Figure 1 (cartoon, helix red, strand yellow):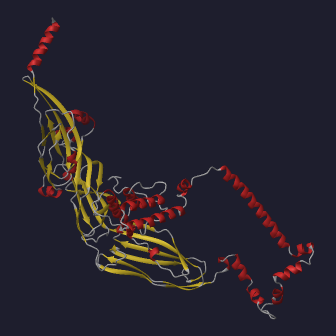
Figure 2: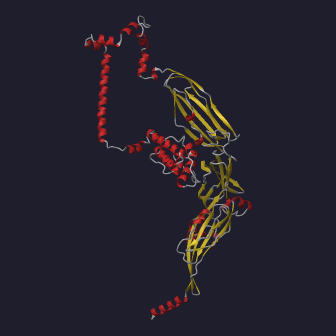
Figure 3: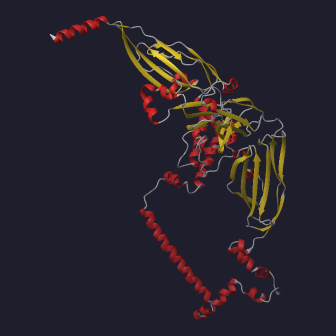
Length: 621
């Protein structure tokens, strides 16, 4: 009886409920006007099939997605049952202006489009709104050391960050583009200031900007993202805790003050970049605010003997350029015939001097003469462009005369020592009768044949007594030959017991300890690269440039052109490599290999491990 009654009641209840089959997707914003750096909440509701996730891909173009939340509910009213699924997205606008949010696709339905007005940080400060938010207590400002820089010159951006709230997990990032290369220089400087009764932490950071083209250039400002304490957590919808309040709100409140994410972006950086002047030197473009070149000699005297090295030390210093832009003076320096130059590895450095970047290059060049005589080292001229006075200058090193004397006994071989030891004997052999030395007659009569003839008439005992040094020399020679024979036999055993090793594997494993094989392979790859650039063949150029990189870094070769650009960390190579990479995968326009050929006409030397460094470390690194 009881079970029958239950079935009857369930049937009555079920028959009285009407399920709503009408489905729709709606979207709304909790704010229609926000300041740049503030958050906005997008709520999407699906009253039909909400099993799948809504498509929010289009939002990433204009927003940073800080978090998402999903929930569902079922209601029965007057016998009608309805269900809905709510999807909430926490957004941070990436830029100012009016942003149109495209319709959200969800379960075969879509919402209406929305619009959001985002005011810049400057407009917010001017209007004086939102003074109690964390965003209003964080300001960013930047200044450039040059208002109108020249193309490929070094521009220093000084960024000042004033923080009036506590931050955690903070990061400050600034991205470059194809028009401007960007990297951080130096470390952050921090101090505290007090203004209007509030303490502010001041963080100063320097960025290096290198414009790659002339004309008006706009670069997105640095972006700060951090976690801050939410002072308005009890107010409801302004905090990250209320965003997830139905799940984590009370638990978070017991242990720690709720946190929320702030996302701030500084105003765009604008530059009016000047083109390379028509009257500038065509072979070498070196824009700098100041440039000096000094030389020192070791030894200082100009009279040397054949085989003795003369070291020329060159110190190049420039303001407003990077170390990678300083030219290789050793390759530009000419020497006369009869003198060879042996340049040492250059040592480069860069850092800030005041608000300007200063770069230095130091290099030793050994000069060795192969024959005596009078030599003149030509004068050296380095042309550069003065970006302050907007004119071209030339730094000149004067010519230098060298007197190379014949080799001394200490700097020559055994044959030279013997020839220099008996000069009079050689001269006397060609004369008859008189001699210039007390031993002239004896020296003349003691030729090789005469000595052999006289020795044949001596007994063995007389010969040993008269010439003991001959037997001592013979004994030493025999001992040396015996030692050589023992070494040869031991070496044969080692070679016979050692398994065969592939030549390529052996080269790869030994390339770290010696750079000779790598240099040969790198030279061949560079020659092939130049031919590919001349033929404007991007795919062949990519193949040969990666071959060169594998020869330079055999243990950890870059896997692609972008990886190679990060490894080199030099403005001369980055843009041509980016252009080559695009040309290999797109067919929009023909590729011109002139820029790449020019950049790799003086590549880094093989064997030098250039380690990539993170451009933007953490804010509180």
